Image 1 (cartoon, helix red, strand yellow):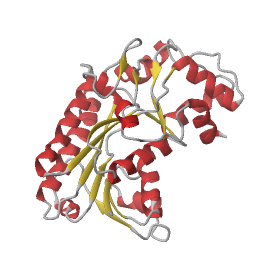
Image 2 (cartoon, helix red, strand yellow):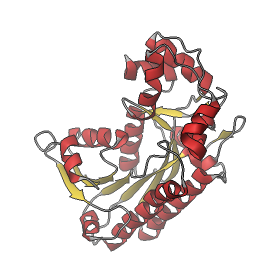
Image 3 (cartoon, helix red, strand yellow):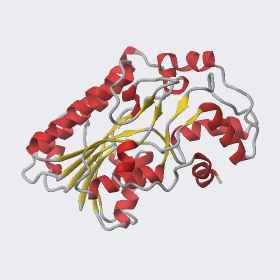
Image 4 (tube, helix red, strand yellow):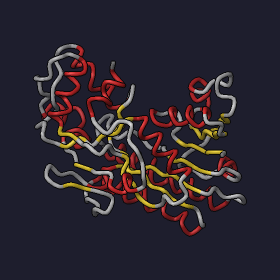
Length: 306
């Protein structure tokens, strides 16, 4: 296949590009920073990777590159867990997903040779937050900021269905890998100062990076996969259990909690990302026949951290 990918230099995207090249596919990387992408994917090691500069929220000549691709994987979006959520920051978070997806769909509409499938990411923030509820793909959306972002994001992606393009929406949980959210959690444990964040009772719906990449590959190849699938492991945990498991794997204590007010002081409204959670189960993902390499947290963390 020839696969176009946005967000290719990120945690998930870079691993996906590696796997696609290993399996003999051509990859078209759409990036805002070609110089950085060339460092991540040096030509000597990534001979089947083509790099094109694009502006995610603006129409342009880059859209012509989508014609002739067999598939598009749209992973792009501004990080939601970094910095305070000012009004300007919220708009950036929304635009990067809503307008970014709109321009990808616009490119597909213009293409003479359209891709067969669009794999578009979303997030489990779609469901809102709860300490008591359990969510799966059939659950209704929440009404907070992240839920509204996910609704707008997904609404743009669904427009490809009018073009006879198969659509798979993957609602990502917290992706665990060497980097990302986990990299921010580890340093306090290494300094013997690790522990749960906030109340410790909030749910943490996670997935190992290898399972995310395998799920994307299944979505690309399995022609009967269509619609929404939760990209989460089947065994979510509460924050207290996460902290205890990280401590066990690192052989460090996990008793020193990070108070909610400290996170709120740092992140403002954005603190919701770590102080509140949701228990999300991958019902349709399991029904699709997907097999998890890491369904349980401790083996997943051992593979990453040891």
